[in-house]
Length: 284
Image (cartoon, rainbow, N blue to C red):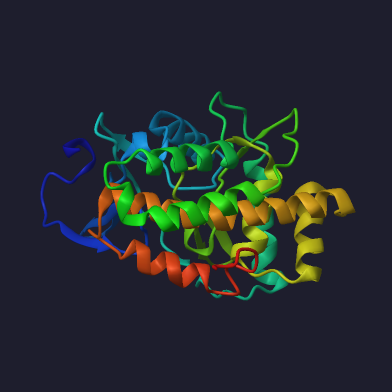
């Protein structure tokens, strides 16, 4: 990494603490915005993270001006990228047309990026995570919660996967968007892959609390059409899948990582009983 750091001058390092998956640091020095260093903190095999695909899509997105440029990386999945000045949205964000439009424009641009080989299917992913939980040595710790999540999974309806997939981010929550002066940049690409763009849209709708008029406006910008009944039903199905993905992720992280950085089980119960985040699944 020395090749991208100054030969002289003091370095100041501060941790960026909004993410749950990785350790991220802002390294800066005098008269320079600095760089961001991301150190993976996930068990990539357990969570089915494809780091080569992540890097490929990240670099493509940077070419389109959608994210920070990758400056350096190594075989341990440590990545250094340019620092983007800006703020993320809050979890309870309430958008206006002024803030929603640039997000939708960035998503439309993202979905036009040249295809890659790696596919992302949230239903296949959740099935793999549940299987990993079931066969984990400490499965007994969360046996009841695993069974609960498995029942939720069986209730899902899987939309027909379109023949033509697009490059998707697959985790467009408010904390994965940086905004400054009305411009939006996307960050955190470890879920990225070829997918139905309606999944990206469903995450946007759900995680950003869009109302009915905003849903119509966003859909028109991204897909240049009005949502019909069929696509509206698919969006709801993907919203349900997004909610359950987050819940299963917490269970798996509890087993694989323990309580190193957050109380995963506490978060699981909090999200499960939050009517805003989870209007779909009821704990018995």
